Image (cartoon, rainbow, N blue to C red; front, side):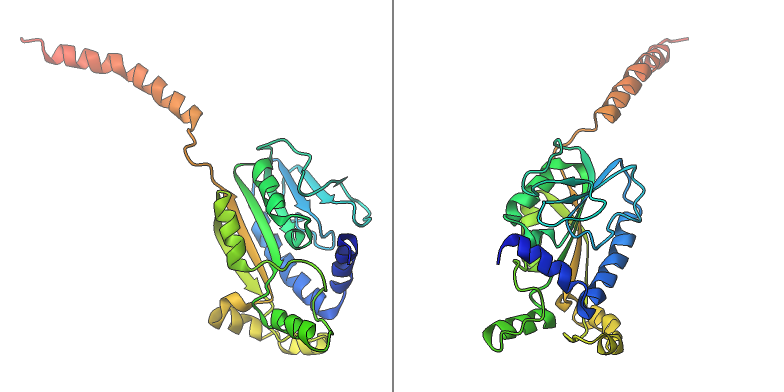
Length: 253
């Protein structure tokens, strides 16, 4: 299956009851995660079915697709492993399942690190292979061939992704999992098992069908130039006063 067909397959799967179930959870996480991220420039890479930036208030927002599928209202088309933005120019980058469908997920992450400004934020959504849904997918591949999740795409493990982010200088400051209900195809039964969300997040938190990661780009050794100048200015202004005080204290009556 080609990459273009894989993306279309994911879009079709998101219209199924389990796809809608996860999409609702992901939308809720995104709305909370981006509402207080401030700056000027934000971009969402892929998955137009998710309005990832709708709660954010930055004046310049883009929805970027890589040309694999048409979508009304698209802002730009580009390759995710070669983003058309200058280095250190974006405040927020959102990757909803973009790494799973990327030609080179490593290079896509490196591009995100390049275009994000220091202290910029990266938000990622991914399907968790270490979950009941992932287990059912593997059983389908080994047995009946009837798959529960989209057929193609590299489902990147949560801890593996955290290692990638750490090597690129990102600091994960928030992570959550969702989709603890059994892998069911009926909306009726998915709703009946919704109670497992609160139980699963408490007792087996890393086994949800989907994960959410929020990370900040850290640049070690940064100097706050403006603050340093202010300190120098203050020290120069106070130096004569200190000298005068010392001079007067040495004068004998």
